[in-house]
Length: 316
Length: 290
Image (cartoon, rainbow over all chains, first blue to last red; front, side, top):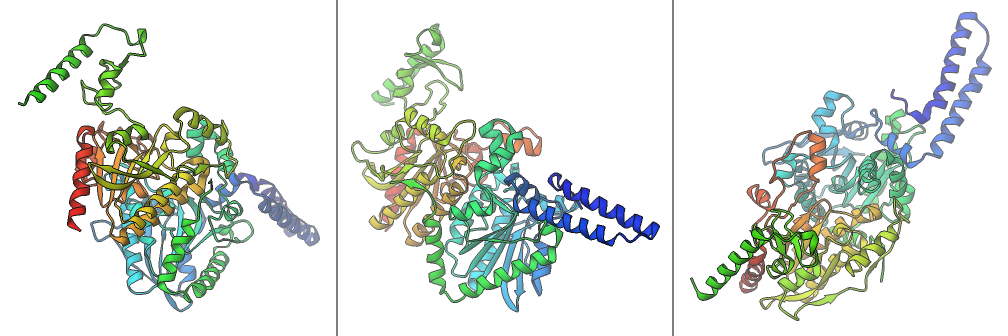
């Protein structure tokens, strides 16, 4: 597993545990007390570290190469999933995947950005950076959900919409804009969860929802800290400073009224226990869908409008 | 050729000659003279100003600010500004190499404006419309909470008064210093566009130099009709970001209004000279169709 630099103290202790285990095996000495002691130390150290993460460290966890991706969550949460492909206009963007699924026995439309774990997969999913055609596919599925009264769940983990020639030629901005407008009109419950990177318009294009949640180590921002650093500080290496200034973590976003809640991750991050993470996520979704399903379609639409209508800070 | 045409032709020829033959160094008299950033011709400032801030030699359209845009497009005395009392604050206590508060103050000093958009109601050749005009000189025309709020309010006002809406954009995108709050202005303004759409009222985008990022990805590209000013650069990602990502040089005309029209994203590309009449015609035909 990829080790993050700030986890080194834990790794040091874990190395000692391995050494003691080896000695104990080879010499027959009873070292279980010492080993237990070290294990407790490692646990405490991890707990301490993860309770005090800086935004730039959360950034590393959110981008961890083994972080659960869209299909991991679908496989771990849903009883059955039928992927619905393509934008019906010539392309099936793999950076956005969606389909109908059963969650706790009930049908939902689940749509999200997809990242790979290997180079080969990342090329297929374009590192989770959708093209306009991906947003159009998502919108097609949202409208399908609206027509057949399926609640919508979106899982978002993207470094942003893809900046490329054909993306510009096929109207990347317009595709996201249309999604924002059309999501505002949906008369079914919409829940959006930022599971990793929630970067800019590329993330928002799937997040005009009745409820928006952030995983504990995920982030949500108008621009990547690196992008912000290179523009405002004229120095991309100052991304950590930008990450602080941008207030991208769940507690800050809760205070600003941007999100509705934070979803706890297993100690050490979602990648250390993807199944447990999926369980927590699933119960949050089920609980919220239950609540939203009591509200009429028209009311859901107007609640969603009012939710975003209120956002912003200004003097008057 | 009418007499008027003949006079105009002659005047144009005079300006061109003066521009090309001028031996006056721009540096010597910068109050009177300037250089066209596009063709390098030396021009009398007065000649550009009288030509709607378009270079008389090469037809390059200089970027203009919101007040000038209103003056050029709206019938004299018809524009009534609304919501000018909404002012920016610094919700994140944002500091980079400079504090956001200082940047706001500087932008105010530079432009005399309180924010990057002016909203109101006015008439174009007698056609009444609600309008939001962005100003690039105020922090790159970026959209923070105030821009989002004013755009949303002018749309709501138009719904109340049953008027069409026009958004004249000039912006680098969302304002970084308000982070996620800026991002949410994209959602807020787009939600307002959804209401406008539900109400069946006409929405026109006028994309001017430059329109990028969070603006094209929200209210800037949601018009029933999308007009762009000649030569304006319009896109989602900036040119440099794309070049760095794909490690390729881009064609010179990439992301220009003309380029985007070729790719079916824009209804009309108009010169500044024709813009007022074009917009008046669009407004009138839709008003007549009711």
